[in-house]
Length: 123
Image 1 (cartoon, one colour):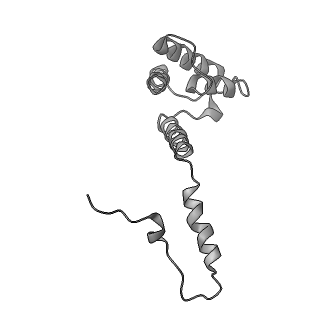
Image 2 (spheres, rainbow, N blue to C red; image 1 turned 135 degrees about the vertical axis):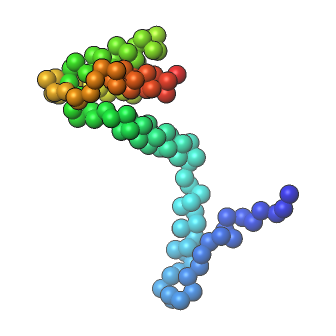
Image 3 (cartoon, rainbow, N blue to C red; image 1 turned 90 degrees about the vertical axis):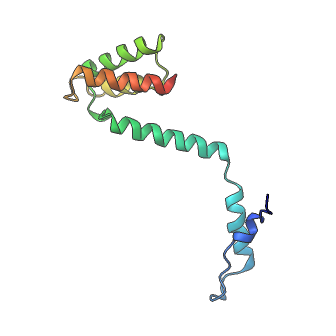
């Protein structure tokens, strides 16, 4: 395979502005190196989970006690154990405590499908 140049070779150096000091550029180059790849993976997974929940049509600000029970029940059945704290079911229950009489207005089949999808994500 060919030679791969070091990351420093890709740094852009401003030549038109005299106020930019080489020390500033060194700070920029080291900033890229300090990003932990594990942190990036965690952030990407959290973002993907957030997007997935939003696309399922579950607005946690409107989940009521009845909706939360349906989601928890289905996710519990799918997993075979109580869903973890970061699951859709747990989040729905926490949210429903704030407004128990609220409702999403979604049918039970949609809520169950959202719970099964989240259970698959957890497995």
